[in-house]
Image 1 (cartoon, rainbow over the protein chains, first blue to last red):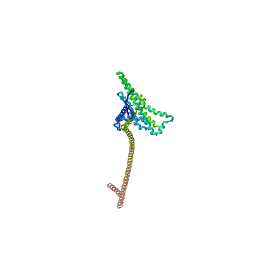
Image 2: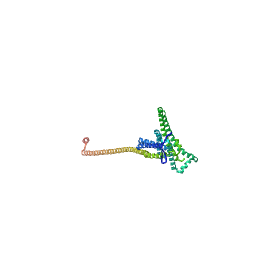
Image 3: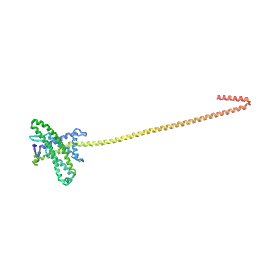
Image 4: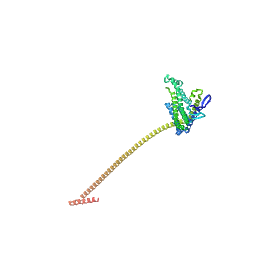
Amino acid sequence: MDDKYKFIEFLGLKFNVANDLSALVSAILVFILVFSLSRKITMRPGKAQNVLEWMIDFTDSIVKSAFPDGSGSRFSLYAFVLFLFIFVSNQLGLIFQIKVDGFTYIKSPTTNPLITMSLALISLMLAHYYSVKKFGFGTYLSNYARPVSFLLPINLLEEFTNFLTLSLRLYGNIFAGEVLLALIGTVAKSFGLVSFVVAIPVEMIWQGFSVFIGAIQAYVFTTLSMVYISRKMERE
Amino acid sequence: MASLLVLGASKIALGDMLFILISFILLSLAVKHYAWGPVTKMMDARSEKISGDLDYADQERARADKLGKEREEALKNSRAEAIEIVNKAKDNGDSQKKTIVADAHSEAETVRTKAKQDAEKAKQDAMQDAQNDIANLSLEIASRVISKELNADDQKSLVDSYIKELTVNNETK
């Protein structure tokens, strides 16, 4: 889309205001969600605590499926925050799209490839860090030549494809969803009242579908992150 | 968006990456401090409590089983004891009965033998008395015979008178 963004230069780095503001809003929403759900922690859980524990159990099950031996409990918090953050980010643009003077300020932060790449980088960095920590640097490097040495280039290439597929899958799904939402919005305005009436149910259906896709993509991203981390922590 | 990727690194907003990283780390820390930590701690405590309760329940059940078995054993023992007591009492009663009957028998025997002896003695006494009487009588008769020279008639009347006297004597006796 031909959205325009405001940029800020700070310490020699360029900041996209729309991305950063949206990410900040998502983070704050996630925090408000878990903060409000965790106010009364008791042995016999109330409604809010049950919801929170259900979410924790859900992400824990993702971690457990990637680490069947139970060694992945240190990644539970990461999976929990990652899932909630991506989920809220995906839904944010379905609810708010704030534009002022043609400049976008609030959207889904995951409609920008840089954001999804950052998230993928966090996951892959964790994977490599824990691989080195577990095996030592030498074994970590020699793991690229396993199970047979001629797979070395393929393994190296796989690192980049993992990174690209992980980030661009999320970006593509959410970006396409929002593009279609914006297109339907344009259609609604094109022929006056008639197209408006027609466009509203279509928009509703697509929004519902996007909520579904956003949830699925958050699940997929979290699952694949855990799978990459667990694969880096075992010898083939 | 494609232009953003193509136009090169000079225009890429690398600050976004830094911003995302920092905000994500801060979010993680905040979530850990305010929600994740307390909730997972409580979940662990709960699972610990549940397993502890289950263990406790198992222990209690084992204890109750043991106690029940002991009770049953005691009940069985007491029943056996009661039967024993009753049997003992019955035996006691039997033996007591036997001794009483035997005592009574022996007592009766002694009484009877004593009575027999008494009767024997009385008979002997009576015989002795009779003998004495007869001896006296014959002495008297003899003395009378000697004192009187008697003819046949006299003798007859004499015998008659003595017999009469005897009967009278017998009647008066």
